[in-house]
Amino acid sequence: MSLMNKIKEIVSNPISVSYKEKKDYSKLDMIVLNPIFLFLFVIFITWSAWDVSRPQTSSPADAALSNAMMYFERGDFDNAILQLESVVEDHSRTSAAIHAKFYIGRTAFINGNNDKAMVLLSESASKLKYPTLKTEAYIMLGQLDSDTEKAMKLFDKAAKNALSENEITYISILKAKRLVSDNNKAKAVEILNSLDVENSQYKELFEEVYGTALTLN
Image (cartoon, rainbow, N blue to C red):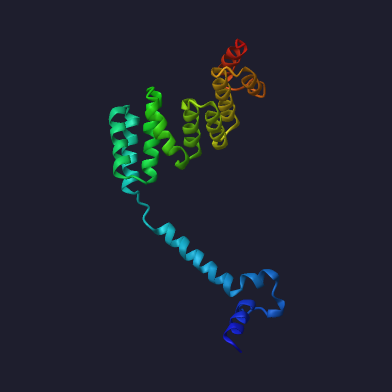
């Protein structure tokens, strides 16, 4: 018998067990006792045991990011930004640096430093790990972009990463608000009319944007 045929025979025949005749094997027995299945199962168990037992240590970049966020929690924003900038400089191309850029960009957005916010959020938005942060980043970018068409696409990306209908409602109101500022009454009202905000926390914002839209010619 050739080597190839021997291999085929081994793979196609289940391993024998002392308490059962092969003719009595069920379909499940044929699968579970297959040598290939058992081999892969052993590898999986071995890898799982190693993964659980190995030390769960943070990288220097992650540790530096955590340290920077502690300053935010204390209300020491100046030192927080300095620490975040160090993460970006010292640990470039890491996930920690991407998230540091996001937090610096968000702070710049809050402070009205729109040019800096636009650059940092544009560099980090698509690379962020968490949908909540992605949503927030795209919302800010949608508000910052001077091109209305691009802004609408950014709001759509924010909605795509949103984790709740409430967030999507908020994003839709912001889209309408942007269209109102661009004097596009018809499209803004169309979006607003599609929303159900009766029990939404954004009802007041909705009414404000709707009222402004109705004043347009």
